[in-house]
Image (cartoon, rainbow, N blue to C red; front, side, top):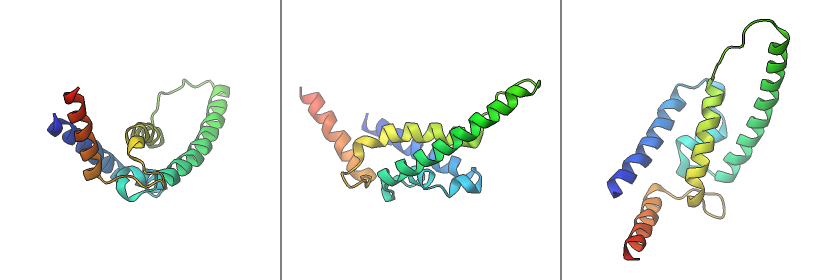
Length: 127
């Protein structure tokens, strides 16, 4: 079971890094995207603030674009751009990483996270 958790954590980390390499330069430079790629070197609170700023601006842009499209007779296309992918990935990442955020915003290294997970499993088995 420990190997399974380790594999999942590594796979998530690897997939975020691979996806980040395929993103436009503007998104790659965002602090919150960089935090997902190298989470133990990032400050969670700074990444969250940068994400909120980006997300607010993105929502305003999308709302204006939808209003423009509503006035045009063309059919609406279902599109999911890199921004939407990153937003979704960040929301998943933030839920997964939040238990491992230290009070000052630093994120625990992977070794500490795994130790906590293993300790919790031992306690669970002992009950």
